[in-house]
Amino acid sequence: MWGGRYKLGPAEIMEKINASIGFDRRLYAQDIAGSIAHCDMLVAQGILTAKDGVGAMRRRASARGKLANGATRHQSSERR
Image (cartoon, rainbow, N blue to C red; front, side):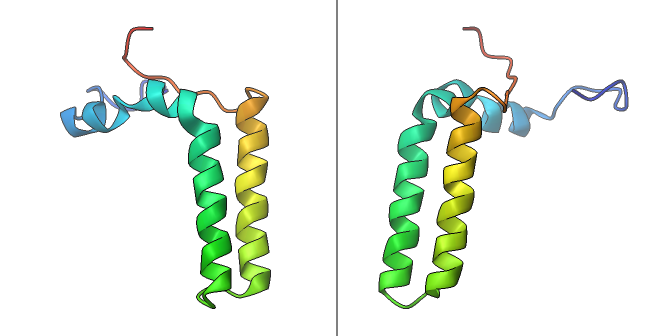
C-alpha cells in the first residue's frame, strides 16, 4: 500500500486501529444500516434537513453497494 514511500511500516497505533478490519468487513451491512437509521433520526429531530439526510443516506447506501460488490478491499496484518 505504501509503495516504498515510507521506510518504516505503520505505527503501532495504526496496527491496533486496523486490527478490527476483519470484523468490520463482516459487519459492514449492520453498521451501515445503523448509520442510515441514525441519519433518519437526525432528520426527524430537525438536526439535519431532509435534503442533507437524504444525501447522507444515499452515500451510505452507495457505500453498502460497493462493499457488497467487493469494490472496496481492505488489507490488514490479521490472519484469516
